[in-house]
Amino acid sequence: MEKKEALYEGKAKIVYSTDDEDLIIQYFKDDATAFNALKKGTIIGKGVVNNEVSSKLFELLKENGIPTHFVKILSEREMLCLSLEIIPIEVVMRNVVAGSLSKRTGLAEGYVLKRPVLEYYLKDDDLGDPLINCSHIEVLELVEKDTLDKVSGYAQKINGILKTYFDKRDLTLVDFKLEFGLHKGVVYLGDEISPDTCRLWDKETGAKMDKDRFRRDLGNVEEAYKEVLKRVCG
Ligand code: TMP
Ligand code: ASP
Image 1 (cartoon, rainbow, N blue to C red):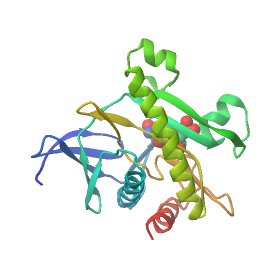
Image 2: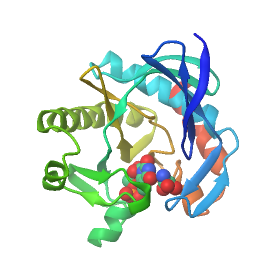
Image 3: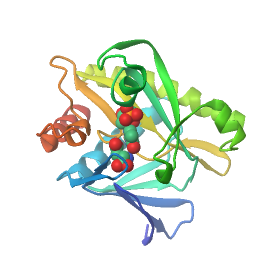
Image 4: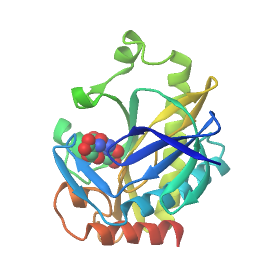
């Protein structure tokens, strides 16, 4: 597999083309941003943790029948993936109130939801990724109805699989963000699943073990990422 030119550089990853047009390489950086890149920093070793944690979780999901873009891990910071046409919707699943749901509803952070909540955000940095609903998705023609049904079905199934997996590792899966894409007309889970894109709280102490430590200046950011790696992959 030959790595070719950078196709796209995002806030946390660089995507490279390869000599196979069906495959791309995701390179995980240590760069961290929050609040639509108003806050910038570095979390040393984050790229390695996110690559390894994502690879492990994609394998777990694949074993459980979820189609993912993950092909194989190539190096500490690189993963080989199917090339996807990304659907411009960020799918958030929530089990416990935190972050923007707390702000939007006034419910206290930590309130356990009686059912998982599924939300859609428009993937558009210039607009600050606003919350949208099914009606917006339909009118804006962001994706076909049957594809959206598949995406929401997968998101709910993924939540069940990951919640159980993290729970066995003494972590509460509070919420997380997913991105999906199409390859030859088939829907696949894309992007990453990592402490950047999930809220994970220690089951015993409630300590935050994810990017909120960076967003909210809580300290011990690198330590939290390493601990998640240990619990997920160790
Ligand atoms: P929120 O409470 O800020 O809306 O975040 C919900 C979940 O989505 C949380 O697990 C963090 C994740 N997330 C991302 O992965 N990328 C983002 O840009 C944002 C805002 C949240
Ligand atoms: N993706 C967000 C940003 O734009 C970061 C976050 O809150 O996760 O900076």
